[in-house]
Length: 107
Image 1 (cartoon, rainbow, N blue to C red):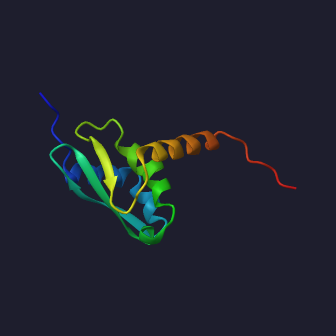
Image 2: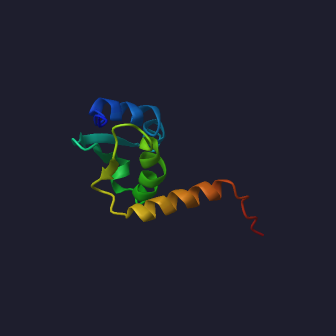
């Protein structure tokens, strides 16, 4: 028996308790546009996020990880983010490793 795809309301709830508060702190927002029968969730940035050049970083380090391992989710897509899955994984790895690195001192 296969897992039922997540609903739009469930996906919105995940965004609301994970990434939405931080995104709203930057005058932006993220919304679920659709969820298909295979569990592909499509999201869309709004507000200040629409023009932000860091959308791929936010997408790869915050939005995609928020849905990792969630039953009924096969993938997370965003029409305004054109970056390979390899690149988003690599960005996330670099962000995690840089969080544990001491800041460099400049003289």
